[in-house]
Amino acid sequence: MRCARIIAAFLLVFATAAAAVENNTTLLVQIDPDGRYRIWHSTGATQLNEDELLALAASALPEGGEPMATSAGPAVAYDTRQGVVVALKEARGDDRLLIDRDDCGGVKVWHAGGPALLGEDDLTELMLTALPGGGKRIPVGKQVARGYSTRLGVIVLLWKPTGR
Image (cartoon, rainbow, N blue to C red; front, side, top):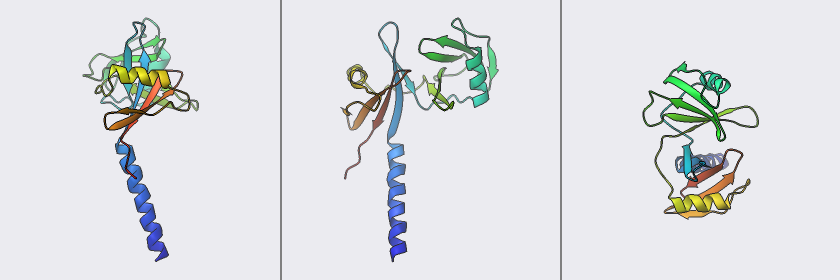
């Protein structure tokens, strides 16, 4: 009987965690020089392997590095104030990638292509309230958002709260 309770508890925790992951969206918000918001998505259609990403990052120049052949077609890397941006000429929709490195050297890719999930007012409030450990929770329709300030901009976690 005790074993059955443990298994049931494990399944409940696993099901809750899976539902939470499905309801989460992560965005990176940056401010362009003209004052507009640039939104990067944590997932996207264009996928490059880590070797391609590292080679592109190493070739990045402010005016654009040498064009490189990749699995997604020709790419050029630009070293910008916001980070290394990869332009993919043949990609449709998701034609720009932002390469980020975490503190342990891992590669994170942010994608330009994706739906507009937040309005201008929501973005402004998230940018103003973002803190390194997470700003205040902002209601956005049926979802909730929180901004985390980072060296690249503000990472926004958007999720649907679960009832208790």
